[in-house]
Length: 363
Image 1: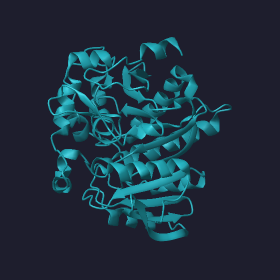
Image 2: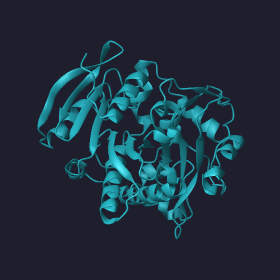
Image 3: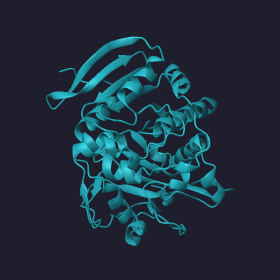
Image 4: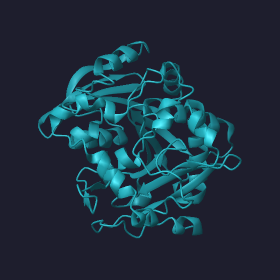
């Protein structure tokens, strides 16, 4: 256990139920000259953390926080109660099967900050990917027990850009390195094809309202993470950021500078590299609909290994899937844009199957 690592340890979050797994959070500087530092939160696996893979989770926007969404309402170990006074356990937290690392990216999102104010108005895909690569390398130097560990990247929405772009950066970095420390095995997420297409949650409530989703969860997060005692427990906002923590940054969303028009060329390179790649889509998602995802994937012209079939969860159809040479596509039945919010069990079983390297169950 390094000294820096120990100083990032969270003893307990305010209002948190007792747990046996370890948590760490804090900052990793990714650019000294411009003063950019990214905030992370690691929730280690609930058992045998030292043998479990490491999974980096990214939310999209561009400009939305993986602490607000991924960690607090989707796949993290805790959810926030309505008064933002306490946390309760998420039954289908992904840290049951992996060590989950949430990253607020790029600088300007959540607690991640920059000392160069122009950075907030000239962010884009390229710098986001480069900073994320620097983050992973430096974070692993702080947490050397994760060097060479099986490593996966996951995310949703506009992270359909971040995830494969970072995978490409890591793959290229590893090729140049004589002793690569990042043992990238693959990634799982949504595929997003439209540049500058704001996939912000507030704009997608049309696909959320009918399924018992509480649209106020974002405001619970904003109350909780602006609490001084919470920030202190998480070693967050240590520099006194001159604005409140928000779930999404309007400034970043409005001023996004560069975005790949298509992620398909990147997918082609990463398929050729032999990575494990899964694409998932909620079948009631109106923002990144299944039809658009299937249309995008059809342009890869991949050979079908296992044709379209229903997969099962808890004795019911969990969705449909097709396995190609180099990629698996799966839908999640009854899920909107944030798949784990609507179908936590199905999302967890999808993720668990992805990690196992197996096919989704057909009965």
